Length: 348
Ligand code: FUB
Image (tube, rainbow, N blue to C red; front, side):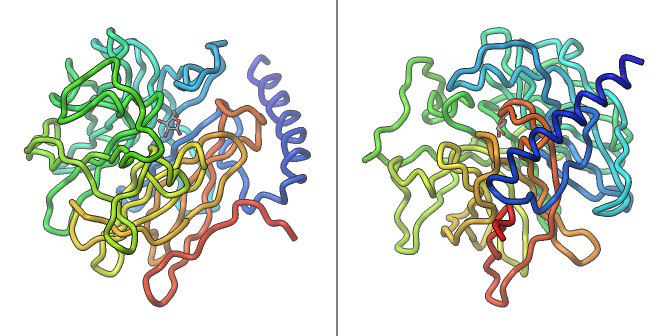
């Protein structure tokens, strides 16, 4: 009965919110699920099925602030479907914050990987000192439940892990996010709680990368910065906030090139930059996804049966920035390998 009331409430909110979205144009795609709020979708094809590893947004009444205090998530639900547009299955709680021994608060955007019969779920969460670290949990099934390791990955910090498998069998983790994601507090892999954000004329903070060890639970090398440069080979300044990195790293390969995509945060774009190897440098190429409704923009890019798809989110169901819903749409390349920019709302 309660469940029915909640669904009805969500439906009413959806109608209300779509009335709002009409002002900005008609959404090009619809929420994949509406019985829970979901965000930050990391999609993978495992065992011939699409598995989505999203954040699970909830209302806890936590105060909204510039550090994302209102993103107060406590568990993960894994979703899956046979094909884009197919029926979406919610596999229930895959990992609960109360079962992560070192966790304090805020389970943010996760990712997953598969190796040798084991599925790995990578997740950022604040530790008991309120410092974001990245943890790993394992399962024999892509949908979990996942068993967390007793400690975070040694040397890990900040948020938004993306684990990429290269064609040579090496796995790399990309991560980082400024403002509430705390990346600005880390210089030379050392923590400084009082470090400030960069000034507009300073070189912007850079995302991070580290190759994973064979155990998939530790870094094989010191964490390195990922250079994103303009067409002249220069790093972006903090003032270039429509192009510089903010959060939501994703890596994919297309035609032998490495595509590093990310959110620009306070200017709300998903941008991409292309390089010749997993470490970069990556040269800025353009916008993958224009701003969506809601403050955050976060995505993944995946090939499914020869076509490419962008998984992303907006706030169509709730109209509230911390109660998001995931979506999917097709992504297309031009003949020169550039990505066709996606407008999330049809203005016509
Ligand atoms: O979902 C919490 C945070 O919001 C993510 O970690 C960021 O990428 C942003 O989407």
